[in-house]
Image (tube, rainbow, N blue to C red):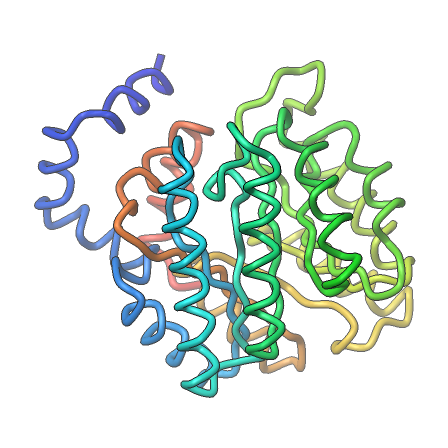
Length: 306
């Protein structure tokens, strides 16, 4: 019921206007989204990089329904990468790309071509691209496109979601030399047939997947804000003899900034996931709709700096 209400609100221009003008909403947006424009993304990136953090930037927009929209998203990434390089912010800053924003839902070849153009621009800017993972129906398509991109751009990063039952197998396939893999819990509402449903089972899967990646030859990127999982990751790094430069932690912009600083102070690489763009309202509402429990997560983040 709550999910349906949130989704309905996400499509209402009236609700969007109310949310956009409410003082509390503006605090939420400023905390979790860098801003609407490329300049906002560059400003946030500069602040984070100057603070010792690495960055991955996500241009918001997932509901692409036409080739023209997909091309516009591609062009924004090309502009962003050029400006990051000009500002001397690469290679500390990379980009994260959703294939759905590049046309995946209606033309997989177009999505691949657009992603390839972004990878070429990233290589020219001396940085990298990570392909975000979305709901389970796109997993095979995304991994197929990843494999094709890696033939010419081997540093292209993958994302795997621990709540999917298939992910341990995918981790084994991708824990190879030079393979950058972001492991997250997963935020989409998925059926029990493909995904673990209880937080305990998701956490247990995360640890199993973490062990596979940390014991492999790739470069694990551990995306979590969970203190217990962070502690386990630190322990596993010691167990598998992984130096701090052979893996990294990743966290969302605005979430647990003091913990991000602590990990940097302890010598770890921490990459902050920074969303920006006009579609901030849709981004926040979709994150809440995917898992209404995220309402409490964002509320706690607003009241905590740790």
